[in-house]
Length: 156
Image 1 (cartoon, one colour):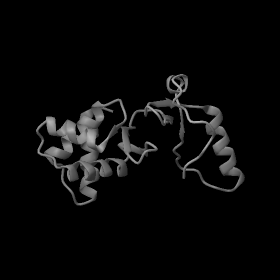
Image 2 (cartoon, rainbow, N blue to C red; image 1 turned 120 degrees about the vertical axis):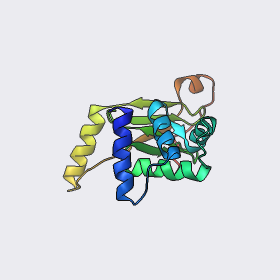
Image 3 (spheres, one colour; image 1 turned 90 degrees about the vertical axis):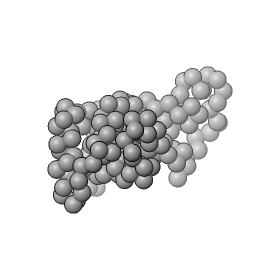
């Protein structure tokens, strides 16, 4: 999908919510679209501030929320309380492994995991629509550097 087409679709979505496409919203969508990395709302705010769009921090947060609601972005908690975003249109589904020490995010896709999820959902009569899988642990570099904590503790 081209950025122009994304802008058109986002504008249609905004109209269904009784909102209009503003210059800050347009800039935030284009900035998100141009990023191939995961980013936080604060990082987006810094980027749009540098672009001199006149977007407040609140506008960035609200626009990111609208972009998630409209299906342009996905969001996930990085395991440390920060929401991260990535644009998803035109990208294949993938899951994430997040290093608790350095914050590195490794994207992966496993047909075996996908199949198991679908099989289990069918077994219990659950209609699976979407899912997010986030694995937390330590990357090879941090493990080698001794930054991995012992044990397999899981935080809720």
